[in-house]
Amino acid sequence: MQLALPRYYARRLWRAVIEFELLEEGDRVLVGFSGGKDSSFLLYALRVLQENSPFRFELGAVHVDLGFDTPSDVPLLEDYCRQLDVPLIVQETQIAEIALHRRRENPCSSCAYFRRAVVNQTAAAHRYNKVAYAHHHDDAVETFLMSQLYSGRLQTFLPKSYLEKTNVTVIRPLVYLREREIKEFIETLPYKPMPSPCPMQGRTHRHKVKDLIEGLTRENPFVYTNLAAAMREDPAAELWPRAAGREEMRKKHRRIMRPAAGDDDPQSE
Ligand code: SF4
Image (tube, rainbow, N blue to C red; front, top):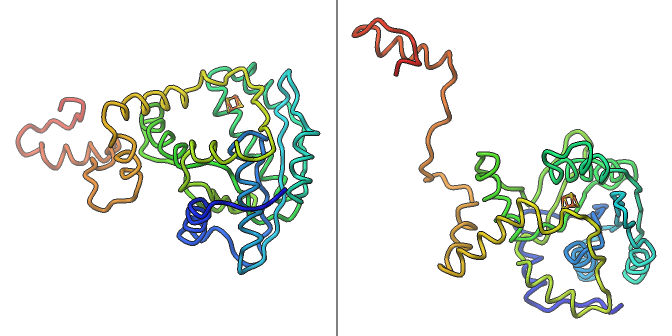
């Protein structure tokens, strides 16, 4: 397979690599490869970077078969990795059974948790020091809004994070690429990404949030970029202070109210 990326894509990838210090000399990088469009693009893109990099790093891929009724098309994945000259490890699991049937409350979060654990453990077992995931810019913005709506937290995933437990660093080199850009490029390759066998596809919180952002962005084209801007650390952000604990409130209440009321019950405020 010919290895080349349009200049726009290469610039976005190198920007992420340099800004967040994602890659360095001697890295062994294991790519989480589901076989879908995003991770197929990531594998291809990292091969292109590897060919053009001024420093040397190694690449491998791991596919976690989640154990859905429709099994992964392993020969297709092996063929793609062979064409890219990247060694592939396939891990068979029963994650679908656990996430969809035994923990039905929030199947996606259980599924993602167990899948990440398998990838990170595989990396540690095969002496990879980094794990690369194919999360792109749209994923980051959607996660940012999802966290607020469903977890009450102002957060998204980081472009780079160190996992002490497995001594592995997680990197996300696609954070400066939009989903539609990845889709457009992957359609030019002689490879059809593997369709997801998951019955939850299209019915997740992520899909709801994606539709919400798309709808709002149609009404106001700045909605997406405003959300993206709000993801950045900002010392001038005007957020409420963290909620005071019960004991802290009791002390404050005593300090402020005792002279006047002598009432130390914080619930009375
Ligand atoms: S959509 Fe399916 S494969 Fe993806 S995280 Fe949810 S349960 Fe897992």
